Image (spheres, rainbow, N blue to C red):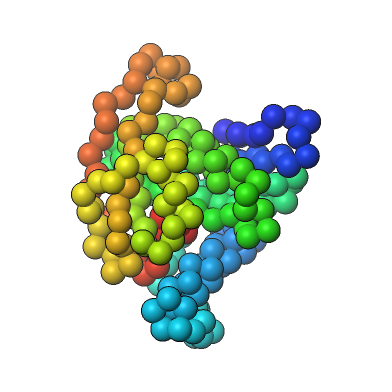
Length: 203
């Protein structure tokens, strides 16, 4: 599975499944966590997170389940460089959770977020899902705006993370994978996900 912007553009994104344990993936996941954690610390404590707080948070927020059969990790490349990521975690046979969504600051505003979410929809269908859910923080306004722009809507709380303040869901329209299988799948239900110390859907 690969999604890309039209050929011939100067700012070309491609998104494809990747090994969540690869050096490129681990570097982006660390940057993601530092970014969202420091935003939280600045907002609530008026300071950056300490090195110990960051390392403890990373250790408490593993991403190794973002690999088959329990999920998938997507890597976004801008002109070939790994500059964005997103993950999907299987909650039940018809529902996946979106997490670890991140675009490097230098690449924001170039369409990477939209490319990631288009690839997320396709990857979710390939996992057999009919619905994508996520939770996030209220202060992560840019991410919330992106999700709402791409079809996510408020849903009842499905998780108990202390950092979850708003929950979104999206029912997937039939896509390539569904049509190839001979039809669309019924929408699945969301179920509680294991709590992970961190900030979910903007991860």
